[in-house]
Image 1 (spheres, rainbow over the protein chains, first blue to last red):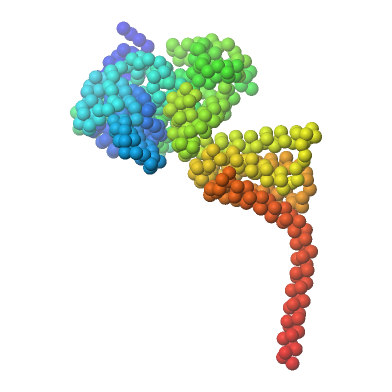
Image 2 (cartoon, helix red, strand yellow):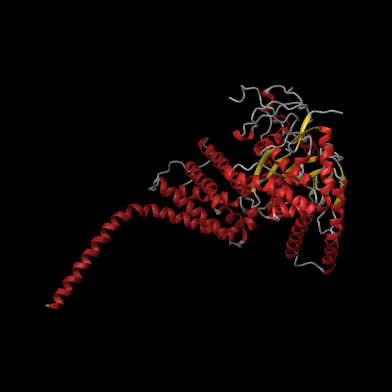
Length: 282
Length: 294
């Protein structure tokens, strides 16, 4: 079936073709996804994701939906973060309760011991089976089990009810969504009133000198790395092309506002190489 | 100007939380309808007018008039901060208190992300609310005096009562107030906290009426600010029942200030007398010295 013309990197394809091609890309790169991220960004992607988590500042009890969460980077960071916050909460509570009987201490210890996450949960949703597989393996390997679930789903049509989640994140995924407006509408739908939308994505570098260097690095170095490390030149060519095709900060901000979000704002990281967009469902 | 233009394509679905002014008393969020939302936010908030893309539904809103009834984001933020105050004694002036406040309004805890992590906005909101309460109280008292139902207080009693009333508003939060003070002193908060403080002080002097004192405008401000700040600090460390030590301290400070105003005019003449005395002493000493040399 022929649909409207869309871009796949610098090529022009139909909507259907685009979805298929992107699925193929991630099927191919899934196993080497993390390694490639580290080598392409020289490990800086870890900092970007840490900054995203810091900005989110989730408190225990938060329900997070991580879309296009594939290999689980955001999910694991979320779990670490709420666990640490919960620890501090419990310590503060203990300090204030100096006059408890042994029975009370025992009971509160029991209750809290099995609640190290404070009822926080993260659902990782991805359209690509291979990426989810890699993510689950990683979770097992790193020992993450509590408060974590994996769901196969399409960002344009999420398999969740309305008003469910406190936070919706999509890190380096929205670029690969074919109908961004639908994804944003779905994000709005599944968030609770007061819930927050956070998007971490490559964006436009405005500084001209930096932009030239960045282009040079992107088009000359990254596909080569892709070939050498992952044996896949084309996928990484697609990656850098798709970054150029993605709307810049202000345009994405307008799209998020159109979906109904309020207090939409963005923060540039590394001069605009990456930007975090944030909006609230009010 | 914006009202006259065709309203921009914005939030075609009804806002989930921002309430119509008429719904103030109902608790349910709005049912969805294609009503346009429009508030008067700063310019950067509106998207540039752009062509609707593809399957984007066409605008079928019902015109700009209705949308002005919607609560603005700022009003919602105020509601959240007010609700958060209840949790301050337990959590301090933190994002956690704001998250709890948001929960009581039926919002997600993630709404606390709208505010800064150090609780600055919560504290400034509280201070501003207290100042408003104080203004209302003083206005009420003034009305009573005007209607002849109450006696006009002498200036020192008026100042004392006003400062005491304002400081009493801190009592429920007194344990966490030192933390709030330190946040208010952060460089980025100083403009706001200073302006709130001075407007409160000016307010008190305004309602004190034009009972003549020998203070000029600047000294009045400085004197009362000094009284207020020092009393506030004393209150932080006061463990006496009902803060009686603090109120006694306040009484003394106000009395000092009153005495000072009387002294002010005397100081000038005294100053002259002192100088003459010193001159005289100097002459005497030099004479005595000369005499002894002879």
